[in-house]
Image 1 (cartoon, rainbow, N blue to C red):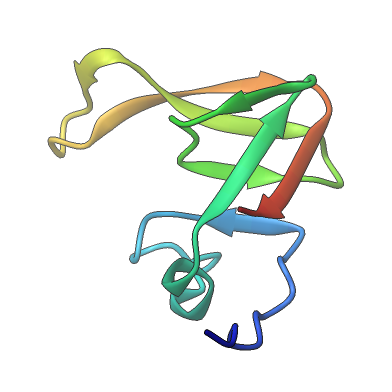
Image 2: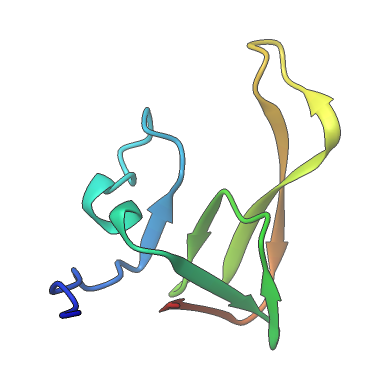
Length: 81
């Protein structure tokens, strides 16, 4: 089985298709995020150069019905699984 060429992971990426930082071609492959040395499965958005990730704050929703996000600062690494 040959592996298809993967696009380079951007510095800033979002899961939300409404975001200007959403790149659909990347989500055709399984990616992982390592934050402060630990793999995270709940990351909605990240920025490597600024050193932050956004994750849902429990089950809390904002006024538009989307999960409320909190920003965590630290060392961010993105990779293909």
